[in-house]
Length: 160
Image 1 (cartoon, rainbow, N blue to C red):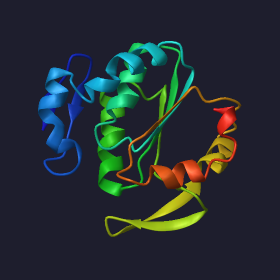
Image 2 (cartoon, rainbow, N blue to C red):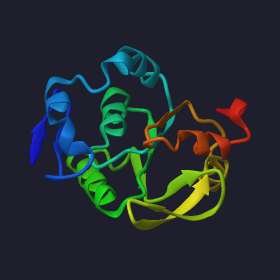
Image 3 (cartoon, rainbow, N blue to C red):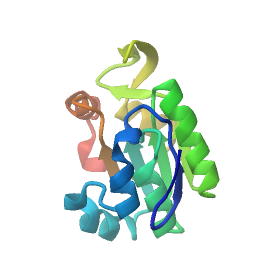
């Protein structure tokens, strides 16, 4: 299904996380309690890590549209969600500024099961090192209760 929003066009699967948020996308009321702060912070950011980008990639794409200088690393470990994320990044002409990564983040290296799908697992510290990032301006985490483990995998919190 194709959803036109105020700033982008999203293609969403009929089922999955994003499919339940269609009205929010249409009205641009996705998590309104964070909207003003996010838009303010993202306008001056250079590097963002979007952990749990989902099929819609809402925050990644919004960052791309609001700030022509930002680069976003959109993290989505699930195969189907990742496929739709890549499509949405491409359709919104953000391929130069959003790098999708099919990986999960946690407090150790290895693999884990998410929704009966085995996915590669790394830590936030190791990801930042592998990407050779010297600074990160924004880290958005929306991972259905696994946020504590992700933060537990980042020992250099003052660097962000």
